[in-house]
Structures are given as C-alpha cells and as structure tokens.
Length: 159
Image 1 (cartoon, rainbow, N blue to C red):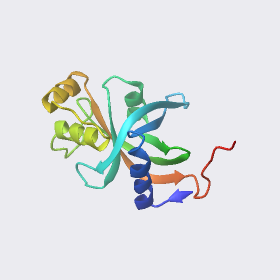
Image 2: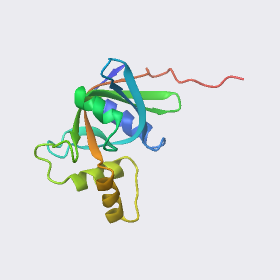
Image 3: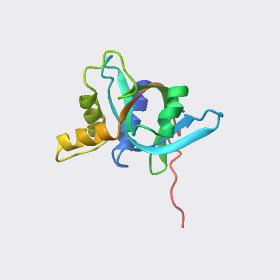
Image 4: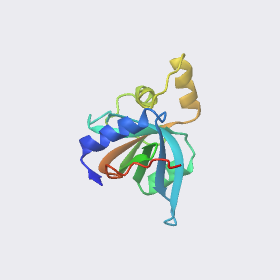
C-alpha cells in the first residue's frame, strides 16, 4: 500500500518507538546486489532545509557508507509485530569525510539523530568524543515513497 509522506512518517514514528527505533537498512553494492544492516533511526527535520527526514548515524569506514557514496538511494524498513513500513529515498551524508553544504554544526546533528532514535546519554561530551573518534557520519534519508502492508492484514497466532 502506498502512503503519503504524512501517513508514512506517522507509521515510522508508531512502529519505531516500541521497537527501539531499529530499522533494516537496504543499500546497493557495487555489483548490484542488495546490502542490509540494522540501524537505529529516527524522524527529525533536515538540518538545512527543515524538511522531514529519517536519519541514522554510521561509523566512519563501513560498507553502508561506501554503498551510499556510490549510490545514495536507500530503503529503511521499520516494523512492530507484523506491521511494517518501508521508507525509500535519496540519502545525504554529513560527516568528517562528507560535507553537507549549509550544515551549521555536525556535533549537534549527531546528537539530534541520537535523540530522535531514542538514545539517551548521561555525558554528551563523552558521546561527542566517541562520535569524533569513530568518524561517525549522519545519514539523512529524504523520503520519496512509503509502502506498508494494507490495513486489515494483521497476523494473529492461531492455536
């Protein structure tokens, strides 16, 4: 079932929170095969345009960043029970190796994504140091489409 941006983001919020904001990320490898990983992602305004984005933070030298630099299209799938929503779009990167024009403060963006994805840290200065040491990069997915299972297709266990 195709959804509007408003409907899609509402499902991301609804399915993300109870599942600790875990989502499956799908990117494209150089040979065309899909690559998957699990990330913590949340919804927040784009730091430059203020448009709604779905974002996560990635370690510096990872296959997901290599894949996104070569082909920025990505999909994130959130689920809660049998319900799910897939968010597709172009990813923008902001990090020590990826400049995002107009970004005022990478440190603040990494914190914002962490909080949007349900994270809480007792020492944000320590968090900042760890993000810098790991060369963490913000991945901002600008949603272009959402799909979900149709209403009424909930699965129930049968005896």
